[in-house]
Length: 162
Image (cartoon, rainbow, N blue to C red):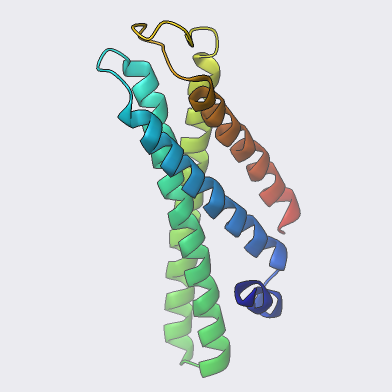
């Protein structure tokens, strides 16, 4: 992988792998949430909210991975091209600030999604399609899995990528 080899030269490769994993989770969350959201009826307000949070989380994770790659490119350009110091500082600070804002937003949306999925645990109905809490088993389990992995990923990124 060209991307992974350039990461190992510039930054901690564990950060790159964590970012790539986050992008794959975000892609899965966006696609799965969009598919399940398409089949939701009008009276299923809380299920619609849960799936909308899933889609929003997926999009934020994809943007987060893109911002990480943008930060990597900015660092690599600064090291190889040797821009003047003022421009490097401004680009570096703006990229880091943008990345941190997106990380905080992703953490908040992920925790809210995890709370919402746990909150709906006892109410979800897999049988009655007319119920306001009806969702397929795969749909609900996908949301729980994505948000649970998100919680573990936050802990791993904090401990693993120092």
